[in-house]
Amino acid sequence: MTEIYQAPVLAAFSCLGDKCADTCCKGWSMQMDETTLARYRSDAPELLAAVEPGNGSDSDAPWIMRKDPQSGFCVKLEGGLCGIHKTHGTEFLGDACHFYPRVTRALGEKAVMTASLSCPEIARLAFAQEQAPAFNKVDVERLPHTLKNRLPDGMSSDDALAVHQMFLAAATDANAPFETIFARIGSVARSLDRVDKKDWVQATPIYMSLAEGSLPPAQPNINDPFNLLHALCGLIVATRKPPSERLRQTIAEMEQALCASLDWKQVLIHTDENSLPAYQKISALWKKEGAQTYDPILKRVLAMQLSLALFPFAGLGDSLSERITIIGVRMATFKLALMCACAIHETGLPSEMVVRLVQALARFLDHLGDPAFSLQIYAETGWNQEARMRGLLEI
Image 1 (tube, helix red, strand yellow):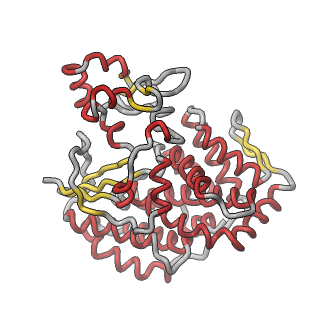
Image 2 (tube, rainbow, N blue to C red; image 1 turned 90 degrees about the horizontal axis):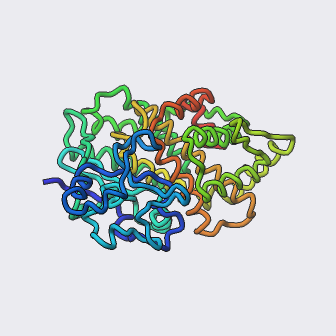
Image 3 (cartoon, rainbow, N blue to C red; image 1 turned 180 degrees about the horizontal axis):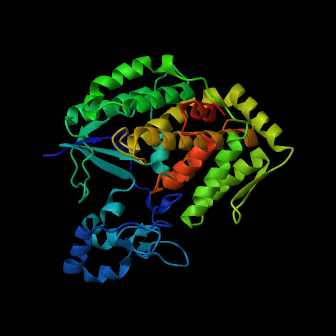
């Protein structure tokens, strides 16, 4: 029998339904699993009209929930609430709709259930929560019909869960700034790439204890903030989907603070003589006021990113070096958005603004499916190198 370990944030989570500021029922092509589709065919054929083939759309799934082409909402959304849930109950929801924002992955006979910051309520709870992002053993009524096993050969489920929790604990170290913490984690990840996975449980604490002493000096580049914004633009354009209203607002604030503008058609960023002084002002204000205030937020975001990926066992990328590079650029993007917002408002940010900034970016970045283009961009800027990543995160 599978043992379920759940992130603490989920214990307090309840879907906001029609009160949600950025519903998952709009914009996304929610996948439909074959098991639920078979139930529709046998028990509720009237629901088949709400499903369409996913091939050729913006999803690789064989079947997805149909969206209204004008509004972008799921055709079964009624007054901000799911019509299928209302008339047929949760057992008729496909896995994607039933579990979001929960993400569940197996480690042998254990399964880890965590959550995505792309949900506004999860982001709010995560930033308000003082409890460390460990896991609690729970009972659940349902697991995804398809649960991929991420347990490496030769490793026990207990050892794998212990390794994952070592990274989560490292992410929330109260005695070091976020940038140092990430540098340590990145160093450990790159070291583990050279170790047989079955030995990770012994190697991880050793590398953790030695990491800071072997870090290369940071190699910053004054263009990094502008390259980050440009890279984000390129990734959005590559998806061929318009950014959400909340993401557009977040990007507009970044453009304003940096005195830069994005050309979405040509995928370019335009700067002028005011851009560098604007960034220097942003950086100075952050070092004076923002860094200490928002360091706990960045640590919590990092822990949630590691948890979402079940790091180091899953995530985007074929190696730990690739996975930590992708997470690192995400973290730098989150940080830059917070820096820009602080510079614009020149005061502490309301909690709802922090939630909006992080959630809007997470809704896009956490759902990129193919890492190839991202890694190509990051290699061109040198962010796949440890010293350059340190420089990037110290923007």
